[in-house]
Image 1 (cartoon, rainbow, N blue to C red):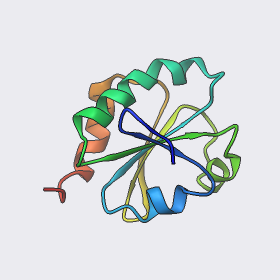
Image 2 (tube, rainbow, N blue to C red):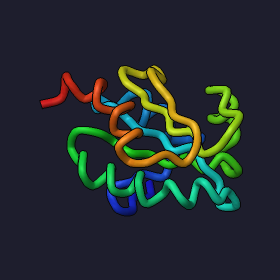
Image 3 (spheres, rainbow, N blue to C red):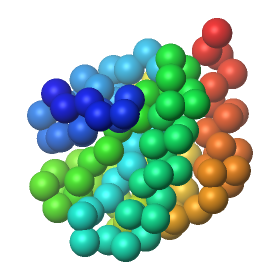
Image 4 (cartoon, helix red, strand yellow):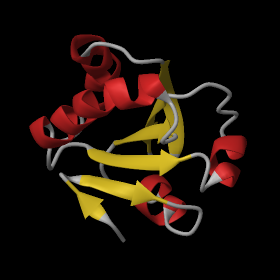
Length: 114
Protein backbone atom coordinates (compact mmCIF):
# COMPACT_ATOMS: atom_id res chain seq x y z
CA UNK A 1 0.00 0.00 0.00
CA UNK A 2 1.37 3.36 -1.01
CA UNK A 3 0.82 6.23 1.47
CA UNK A 4 2.10 9.73 0.73
CA UNK A 5 1.21 12.83 2.81
CA UNK A 6 -1.47 10.90 4.74
CA UNK A 7 -3.12 9.89 1.45
CA UNK A 8 -3.55 6.23 0.56
CA UNK A 9 -3.37 5.07 -3.04
CA UNK A 10 -6.66 3.27 -3.69
CA UNK A 11 -6.72 0.30 -6.07
CA UNK A 12 -9.16 -2.35 -7.25
CA UNK A 13 -7.39 -4.68 -4.79
CA UNK A 14 -7.44 -2.55 -1.60
CA UNK A 15 -10.57 -0.38 -2.10
CA UNK A 16 -12.96 -2.56 -0.08
CA UNK A 17 -10.50 -2.82 2.81
CA UNK A 18 -9.30 0.80 2.86
CA UNK A 19 -12.63 2.51 2.09
CA UNK A 20 -15.66 0.28 2.65
CA UNK A 21 -14.33 -1.41 5.82
CA UNK A 22 -12.86 1.80 7.29
CA UNK A 23 -13.99 2.80 10.76
CA UNK A 24 -13.26 6.44 9.86
CA UNK A 25 -15.16 8.39 7.23
CA UNK A 26 -13.22 8.34 3.94
CA UNK A 27 -12.73 11.03 1.31
CA UNK A 28 -12.06 9.33 -2.04
CA UNK A 29 -10.51 11.46 -4.77
CA UNK A 30 -11.36 9.90 -8.14
CA UNK A 31 -8.78 11.41 -10.50
CA UNK A 32 -6.48 10.83 -13.48
CA UNK A 33 -3.00 12.22 -14.26
CA UNK A 34 -4.12 13.97 -17.47
CA UNK A 35 -6.98 15.83 -15.73
CA UNK A 36 -6.12 19.53 -15.15
CA UNK A 37 -8.92 20.14 -12.58
CA UNK A 38 -7.65 17.05 -10.71
CA UNK A 39 -4.22 18.65 -10.41
CA UNK A 40 -5.84 21.89 -9.21
CA UNK A 41 -7.79 20.17 -6.41
CA UNK A 42 -4.92 17.85 -5.37
CA UNK A 43 -3.30 20.36 -2.93
CA UNK A 44 -6.72 20.96 -1.31
CA UNK A 45 -7.17 17.22 -0.80
CA UNK A 46 -3.65 17.04 0.66
CA UNK A 47 -4.40 19.88 3.10
CA UNK A 48 -7.60 18.18 4.25
CA UNK A 49 -5.73 14.88 4.71
CA UNK A 50 -3.25 16.66 7.00
CA UNK A 51 -5.83 18.82 8.80
CA UNK A 52 -8.16 15.91 9.56
CA UNK A 53 -5.58 13.20 10.21
CA UNK A 54 -7.08 10.69 12.64
CA UNK A 55 -10.63 11.88 11.91
CA UNK A 56 -10.84 11.23 8.16
CA UNK A 57 -9.05 8.80 5.87
CA UNK A 58 -8.14 10.10 2.39
CA UNK A 59 -7.79 7.74 -0.56
CA UNK A 60 -6.90 8.69 -4.14
CA UNK A 61 -8.13 6.40 -6.93
CA UNK A 62 -6.58 6.82 -10.37
CA UNK A 63 -9.56 6.01 -12.62
CA UNK A 64 -7.30 5.18 -15.58
CA UNK A 65 -5.58 2.42 -13.59
CA UNK A 66 -8.63 1.32 -11.55
CA UNK A 67 -11.69 1.75 -13.82
CA UNK A 68 -13.78 -0.90 -12.03
CA UNK A 69 -14.12 1.22 -8.90
CA UNK A 70 -15.19 4.29 -10.89
CA UNK A 71 -17.72 2.18 -12.79
CA UNK A 72 -19.06 0.66 -9.56
CA UNK A 73 -19.89 4.15 -8.24
CA UNK A 74 -21.03 5.67 -11.55
CA UNK A 75 -18.19 8.20 -11.67
CA UNK A 76 -18.72 10.05 -14.96
CA UNK A 77 -16.65 13.19 -14.33
CA UNK A 78 -13.34 13.71 -12.62
CA UNK A 79 -12.37 14.94 -10.23
CA UNK A 80 -15.17 13.47 -8.16
CA UNK A 81 -14.61 13.58 -4.42
CA UNK A 82 -16.72 10.90 -2.79
CA UNK A 83 -17.40 10.82 0.92
CA UNK A 84 -17.83 7.31 2.30
CA UNK A 85 -19.12 6.36 5.73
CA UNK A 86 -20.00 2.90 7.02
CA UNK A 87 -19.23 1.34 3.64
CA UNK A 88 -21.48 3.62 1.58
CA UNK A 89 -20.91 6.72 -0.53
CA UNK A 90 -22.97 9.28 1.39
CA UNK A 91 -22.04 12.44 -0.53
CA UNK A 92 -19.95 13.60 -3.45
CA UNK A 93 -18.53 16.79 -4.90
CA UNK A 94 -17.68 17.08 -8.58
CA UNK A 95 -14.97 19.38 -9.89
CA UNK A 96 -12.12 21.43 -8.51
CA UNK A 97 -13.75 23.21 -5.57
CA UNK A 98 -12.35 25.47 -2.83
CA UNK A 99 -11.33 23.89 0.47
CA UNK A 100 -14.19 25.60 2.34
CA UNK A 101 -16.77 24.05 -0.01
CA UNK A 102 -15.27 20.59 0.35
CA UNK A 103 -15.08 20.94 4.15
CA UNK A 104 -18.79 21.82 4.24
CA UNK A 105 -19.51 18.55 2.42
CA UNK A 106 -17.27 16.49 4.73
CA UNK A 107 -18.00 18.01 8.16
CA UNK A 108 -21.46 16.45 8.74
CA UNK A 109 -19.89 12.98 8.51
CA UNK A 110 -17.19 13.68 11.09
CA UNK A 111 -19.60 14.11 14.02
CA UNK A 112 -19.35 10.59 15.41
CA UNK A 113 -15.55 10.73 15.52
CA UNK A 114 -13.90 11.78 18.78
